[in-house]
Image 1 (cartoon, one colour):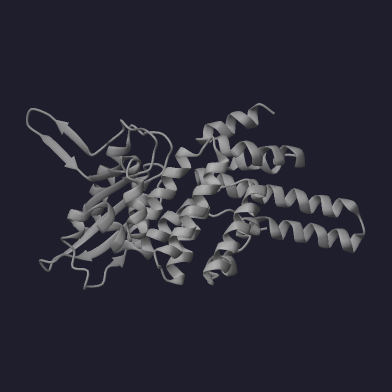
Image 2: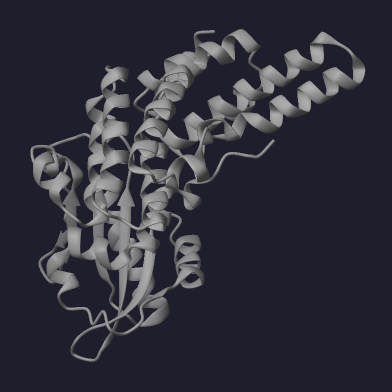
Length: 336
């Protein structure tokens, strides 16, 4: 059975890398206007790994360190941070400052520091880190955008050709549809259909659909309804980008466990083989949902989940959609 993806392999990171210029133009147009997009930009993965190991400042999610050329002919390093935690974090501004200092210390480059905040707090808006003493002062400022600020601009987002308009809509609808799964399914279909209606090429449709699918999680029965409706739409449009490449992708995490159990059941002629396959499937499904919502989970929490019974796993798959933060999962496990 495949292990869940880590947060460093998240669709946020994938879509940022695939459409970096569009991300900059959508979120930070003033900085994007300084960059010479005719010259190649470079993702500095190894360099950032060195920074993040040294910084030791907590969880990082989809961070990108990018070498860009400015229109004035100078090279600059750009740090783009995506904060997806569901609650505000008091040390966030300090963490951004730590990144900047580490980059300057090791590479003698003051980076352009930018943050995309995906949390649900309207009032939490960190944008700098300051210190002030009689003979010393510090005023570190970084660029910041908040996805919630687009919540009243859905019409404009739907009309936008920038792929990150779809990314923002999908993320906002996760928040809006927490208690309305029917509405979530409707928006998942609407956003996916919009990829075709905007005339995106096949690869862009698949890239953006993977993000939509990752964040707008549905119960399995409703996911099947979604696929039936999407397939009908694709047949009407005479295109099958998603259904050919990704059909029933929500079950991929369960397939190996189910197949293994069923093969064992056939080989040994025992009912428990099929039962084990079903349990492995439910486990894979639960871990996939948890990874989508919260990223990497603590080893002790994962161990507890792997020890759940089939009935408990089925129940977990239902209640997960109501969880908004990792502590909700921990509280549920303690209640068993």
